[in-house]
Amino acid sequence: MDNKLIAKQLVEFHKSTFDNTFNSLGILQEQTERMVNTFLQQATWLPAEGKDAVKNWVNIYKKGRIDFKEAAEKNYKKVEEYFSAGETAPKAKTAKTK
Image (cartoon, rainbow, N blue to C red; front, side, top):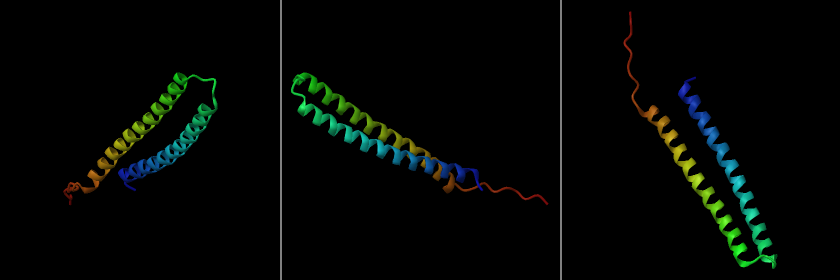
């Protein structure tokens, strides 16, 4: 089997695993955000500045998650382009020896 094909399949498997794990963590983060928002609504003892700080913290985490996903997608695309460029490039002909 061609080494490049094996590497390509390995990268595809890794991307699939990354996407599934990332989606699971995204669901967990959204659930945690809902829990924090419920806590903030019920925490009458917490000043408005404290609530705003926690909300900003949640938004920063959400933006970081989105930025990380975009960076990972961009880099996976580069790897896919590398492997697809190798498939479309004409193979060099080797001279046959008699």
